[in-house]
Picture 1 (cartoon, rainbow, N blue to C red):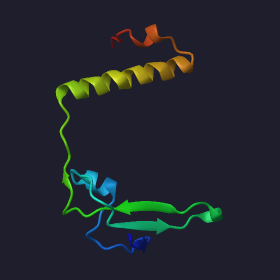
Picture 2 (cartoon, rainbow, N blue to C red):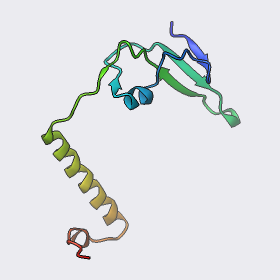
Picture 3 (cartoon, rainbow, N blue to C red):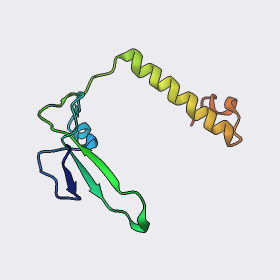
Length: 99
């Protein structure tokens, strides 16, 4: 059973996924070490943050040049499509701007 902790009451050695990422680590497929639960106003579903043990975490993987290029291409395409939805023609965005 995974232990639940109140907000700001979790052991100092456990980390959330974002905290691991800030330290250059990834969970590496480990099971959850705990769970933070925080109530929300209005009777909505409580916020949950899963906790991991940094001792079992692994370093982040470094993307290859080809992966970075593919991400840049996909991001650019997504931006162009968003601009088209807002009425901006694609050809206007593909022109070079000289200052």
